[in-house]
Length: 85
Image (cartoon, rainbow, N blue to C red; front, side, top):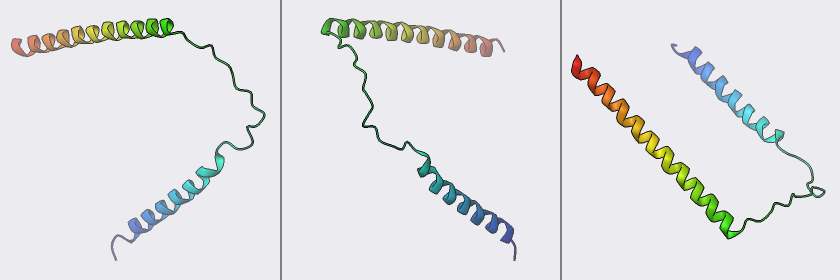
């Protein structure tokens, strides 16, 4: 009967995948974390948070404007190339 080899290969592939899933769960982190000391990070004041927020917004605005300029330049170049042909 035709197709027996491909059916056997798909069955073997499914068996291999199932076996890999069973092994995947065993390799995670193990042990007790009772003796771990957590790091203390400094607290940011409201002014610092506002400065960070404004700086990130300025950077995002600058990046967005660069992307728009590049997009317009790219579209213009493509139009010039196709209109000259």
